[in-house]
Length: 314
Ligand code: UDP
Ligand code: MG
Image (cartoon, rainbow, N blue to C red; front, side, top):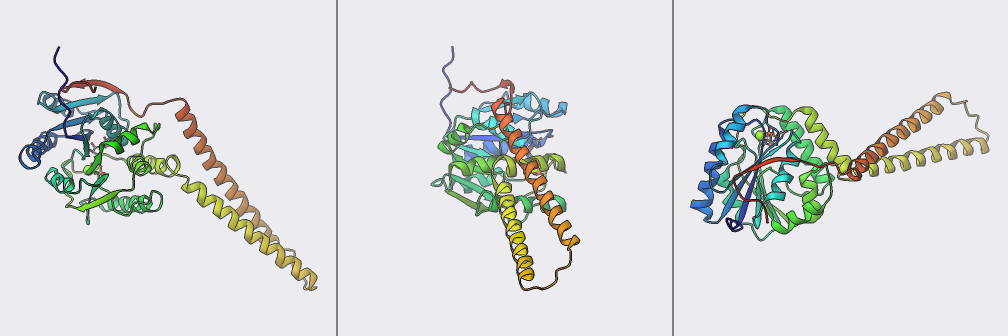
């Protein structure tokens, strides 16, 4: 029986989905950074989020033969957050580093993040993203919500350095719809950003469909915050207040003997407005119930199919 390998200082987690040759380049650049610049022990965990391209699977198989590289294959495509969470769960390092598989963030920027190790979480941040117009637009909206809903003061990047105890806290939260920035914020607000450059994707286009982005966005809004509920509650009070003011105005006019027209239109507007708000509130409440149902039925955020390369955790 072989003894379990010593725990590394850094665990690099890479969600992988239908990637080409860039994977080998990413792994070798990561190895270079850790052996030549950081000079510390590390492991690389590639989590295959149900890639459908044979080429990706072949690349992963050959990379798994390298020392310190672990490949975890999920049974199907669970989405990036599930894949990242799986990697975090398997990682043994004191510090976790997350990075995308398409070299949009440079492995060579990792030492910059490491200079800020006194903090719980260090994120890279990109002044300008090498994305399409549409991606930049959705990314801006997401950044705004990260700020408003989660309270992030900095713009996030997939390249992050996270302390072990933060990850332990994140993993203790039971969710089958993980949203990594929300989980981080549940545990800490000791977060700093390091400006870095953003590069074009080696894959050419995003592997995130609009539908997937939308699902994740609604997971943030509904699954990870009471933001929508708060908005609708406030709106409800506002509308109630307005109708109260309207009633007062009508009564005052009556008392003063000012003739009031039988106000069909204002009546209809009020009824429709309240009806609409009611419907929206019922819909959102329903969404919360669905999430509760999901969690109580313990649907997993990911399922591991096989593990290659490094020894199991423990
Ligand atoms: N990804 C994933 N599952 C998916 C889609 C994407 O694990 O269903 C991973 C992908 O491998 C990459 C990261 O998420 O490491 C970001 O994906 P992509 O580069 O396509 O998105 P973008 O850069 O446009 O945000
Ligand atoms: Mg990308």
